Image (cartoon, rainbow, N blue to C red; front, side, top):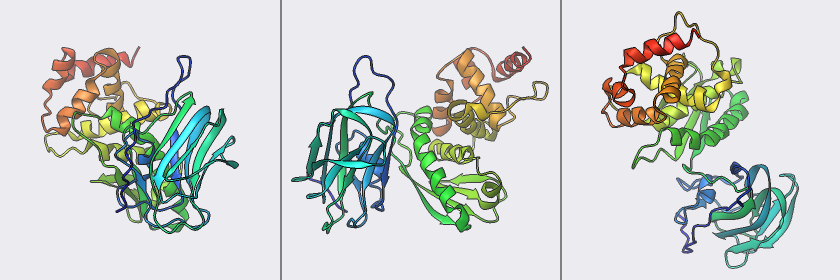
Length: 341
């Protein structure tokens, strides 16, 4: 495995006092990843991590840091190996790139002083070894949001070739959502998987399921429901949950995953609810609503506490009263009454 000798200071994009919220980014590469040295490690703020390619670059290969919105880029620096003679480029429209600087002794640095929507690294045409990018260092206004929990979703099995592009898009969307998921389900000393395998298989009788660090979807379901990428986000939440205790109620396990999906990720798609029939332990999106109610009305950290207890195998129903002063049943009745208002 390729290793870099360079040690970089941690430089975080620093927006000015009047700058807006940090802009999200994606790291794209035409090169395959080497093992666990994943793409997002090129923008995670960790000087000890890097993105490494599994093969030497070929003509047309590039590694791109694309921004969700244009930002004023004051400076950009990349330190890497295998890139001497390569170029650092920028694009105002995210697609039409122009040179900013050349790599010399593993470093390329520029001060564009203009609005860009992407920067990219283009290896030299005569490169003969894999590349490694320690970090894109960008000073911009507004700032760019680094990856708190770097991850790469790898699509490795798709039984229906017509769904390969869909699977790739779903994988990229799960990567985008991963920081939100992992932050919502964080606990001290826990780091979620940073490589997750994704497959679409025939003969699956549920939309999708997670097992360990793999997410498997149904080809039939996603042929019929191509807009349901949120189902894969739900399974990504299960990957992050990584509960091992049999003491955890199934309705809460699914409720927490759907809380992440429908309360945090796509609240516009949670749908309606029948107040007369709703039960707090109904699982999935109904329980997600119940958890959202507790977070809003009683304890903003309740899901964090609940998740930690289930991850550590310490769950009991007492957590409801300990956190809110009310039993689970009392909270359920209160929540159900609120649905009628």
